[in-house]
Image (cartoon, rainbow, N blue to C red):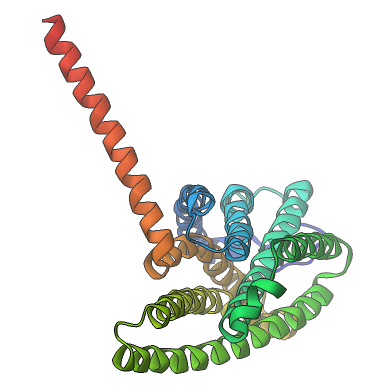
Length: 323
């Protein structure tokens, strides 16, 4: 989304002393991003497979989570390898490869905004689910959610192309406004979701006490419990996203007005790695806070373990038979 080196796209000259002063920080970021890239790829591949196989999850929620998982996978598969290459070239004191830099800017903007809009859409979906109740399925259809996801990726693609055209300072201002507006909206939605979850929890407790054996009431309570848990899971996705992205957004003011190149580099090195960390944390949040997802993951791991153990037993049996 921004120049990872805090420098203008005009020219590539830079004092060697800046690299020497920040050498340790560059190496730390290279090592961290290698690890985070691998974890983002592996965890999100598993996430995509598990979401597709989870039958107990509603289709709109599955579509939105798949979109978010694909954006996280893109960060690990494309953005972080490009970022690592740029950092390595920087450490080795090579001139910046313009094509490599443009590819990084394009993909980091694309997947960052796809994640931002994806978290916003996920919060809107859970807000509607918890407030509309029976009307939710009527209004939030698969076709509408698919159209929304396509719109998110088209808009993110347009913004990534704009990032290549407009000056760096202008991109800081435009993107910070979009980021702030989306995060503010998402924050307000999640506050309302938490308030609704609290009311829902009280209603569930009252229903269990007053009608403990009523079938219809128990069915409503089960649905409410499931809705409450997915809403809480969505809140944790939002909260982790906020923690990872907020430092980047807050740094825009410093990047625009600060004259110190070293300060800009330190900010960008730290905040970009925080943004990339989010792609590895989301699958962990799904597993910890969404029961349907956690059950599917455990079933997948059991199958893998059973297959591995079955192959080992077969090999051992075959070896004994040959002897």
